[in-house]
Each structure stands twice: as C-alpha cells, then as structure tokens.
Length: 259
Image (cartoon, rainbow, N blue to C red):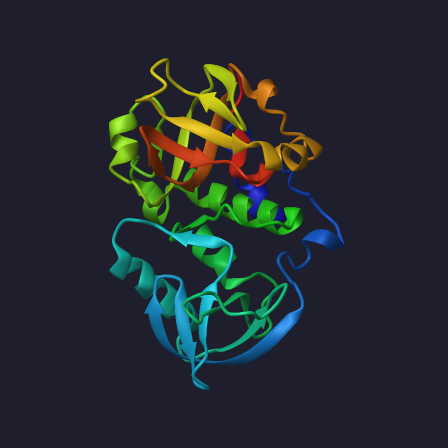
C-alpha cells in the first residue's frame, strides 16, 4: 500500500478519520481475516458477486459497485478472477439473505484483495460497513489512488455529489453514494442528531445519527458537534425522509476535507 500512497499528491489525500498506517506488518496483508474456504471461479454473477465451481455464490465484502455502466464493472471483475483459484477470508462465513457468502477474496499468492484491485482500477467504491480500521484504511487508500489518477468511474465528475444539490442526490434514492459539503449546523431532535448541509431542513441534504450509535462514534473520535462548519465527505445509502438523508453508523463513513 505504501507505493499507492506515495503516488498520491498530498493535497489529494483526505484527512480520514481512520488514519492509514504507512508501514509495518499491519499493512502487509490488509483485510486478511480468517480463512473461510477456497475454490475456482466458474461464473461472474454481477459487478461484485460470482459463483464457484462447487456452486457457492460469493459476494465481495467491503465494496459497493459503481452505479454507472454495470456491464463494464462486471467485465472488470471477470478479467481479474474468472477461471482463477481464490481464497476467501472473513469474520465468518454466514450467508446473507440472498444466500451469498460475503468475503474478502484473494488470488493465489496475492497479498492484496480483489476488492483493493477493483478500487485501484476505479471500478468500485469503499462500502460503509467495514468495522476493521486497518482494512478500511487500506481500501480507502486504493479508492483515493484511483480518484487522483482519474481511473475508471473517476474519469468524470459525477461520482461525488454536491450536498448543495439535494435534487441530484434524491435522484439516487436507495443507492450508495458519496456526498461532499460543509456542515452548516448540528441539531438534535428527540433521539436523532442531524448534520445539516442546508438551511431548509425539510428539503436539503442531512446526515442522521441515532442516539444509540453516538458512544461508538465519539469513542472513535467523531463527535458530531466537532463537525459543524467543517467540509466532509460522507458515504452511505440515500434515504428519503422529506429531504435526502444518509444514516451515519460508523466513523469510517466520514472523511474530513479541510476547513
């Protein structure tokens, strides 16, 4: 990963709330969790899932497919793994509700995951669901490298949405998005804290934080009030509650972009 980071101009590195470890054994094999099996890839199902020859369907954990040009994204995954032997790693091998086994996937002899390769090519986005800080940091670095080099989805400017354009964000209701803007105010209403990016609370974009997740966010150094008047990048699924919303549940969903 250090080679990826050195290729980035300093100004292009966001001040992530999860710092990237520059060296040492912790970065030797990021996202290298417990082995959860292996197999040969028989077919690509979509941009982030595939089927092994033994019939198991695997979902690439830790990434979200880019919304644009799903066929191209699937082709990128196919070029990497179709017909290849892979090792699966993860916290557990319990299938999701669709029967897919979520896993970090490694080609034989590779130190970095297939997820990191797709991110480096600009073919995916880092998800909002990674609990392991070192793993999340390494994937964010791969995504940042592709963004700085304008590879894949980053060749255009439509990936990151402007918080001041709620209509553009609403068009992606139900989809995974990255949104950037300045937090104008932080307000609490009942059991919910709101990071408001506009002055019309019923129309403009906002980030919602449930009271139950506040302790874990603050323990990770994300005190909501400290984000007031800061420019941030937030990632997550867009929900519509009057205006567009993203629910903040993990510190890794937020990156500080400067003053």
